[in-house]
Length: 305
Image (cartoon, rainbow, N blue to C red; front, top):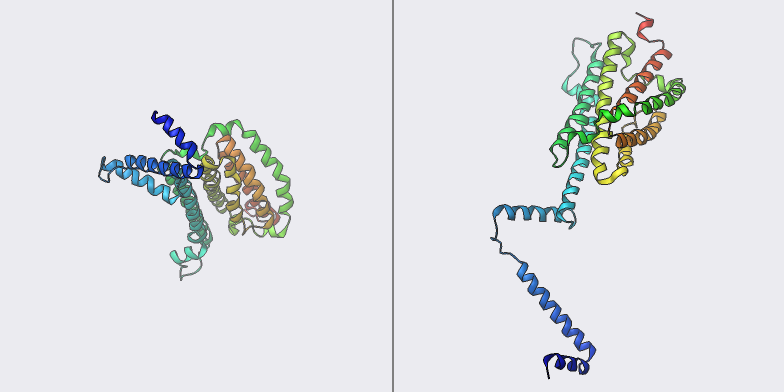
């Protein structure tokens, strides 16, 4: 009798439970043998290969057992989030009036009439460093990323310029209505002496415009552009949350409007791959708000020379 016939005959006599146990033991033995063949000695291969393997294993361990490619993506995602937290913290604390006073104490000879403008310049400088310079360095240093991935295209802005003109026209009546409230015109301009002279007004509006360039780069360029590689369009609502939070010190209508503006400008930046339309709308709206507030208070520079 051949071996095959003997095995079939034994299977007919052997109880089913016994056969299952024997098959499990044989399967385990085969798996162990295969694993032993795959194991490489610790000193096998080149040092570079071992180092790469250790790095990939470390990434996989840090990010919950994902494969090396997924772990690398998660590392970049985490780096973007950490950079955002650092930038927001720097603006909140280093850009504060208390920090400016600590670095540049008031002169004992008397109050400088341009001290407030100097503080505003410090505040804008911290914003530019935190919202623009730091994220740009991080984005340029990350492998597989380019700075233009932060939605810096001028072509998208030119092709969709009419959309931003329409947005400004749509919010203009709302700005006018809100500007009639004391809460609004006592808060704006954020530089109280902006209406003192043309010099004060132009200096302030220039600083304000620089702040908006950094702001749009950070929220609609670095965050929306960087996170959209992993989240797609969901990067827009994710970025709306911190954008709302930086408006908590503003009048409540503006804080509420920042949610709508965050969604609209974020989605447009994602679709057009350009932040420049948002920069223009932001600058136009802010200048209009300042001028309306000064007009309601009778402090426009041309009204008093």
